[in-house]
Amino acid sequence: MTHPLDRFKKALKALKDFFFGATAFEIQQTVRQEKLARRDLILLFSFGDLLGVPVFPPYYSLRLLPYFYPALASWKKRMLKERDLTEISSL
Image (cartoon, rainbow, N blue to C red; front, side):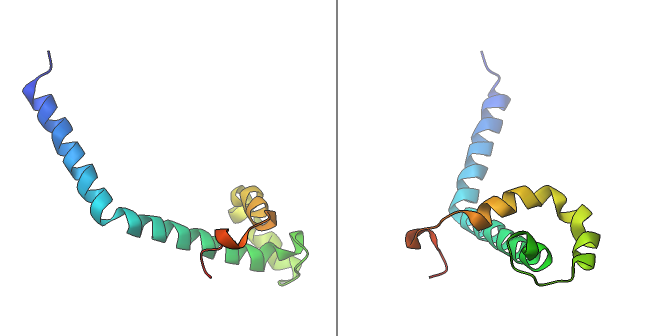
């Protein structure tokens, strides 16, 4: 047997999740995509030589490497992945 207070908390959480999904979910997704796009741009300018695009002198890239190292593997996969015209959202 569940306590009425527990059922009330579950209903309140469900209501909060519903209103979040109806109002702020799309905004949160857009912000997350923009953050990823900006990180990709910074990584391209800093470590573009890994993909064959020399932009910065390697000295400055090496100074930034400890900060961006965790994101490099997934960034390289995203940049080198083949894309179809239907996948590009900025068109």
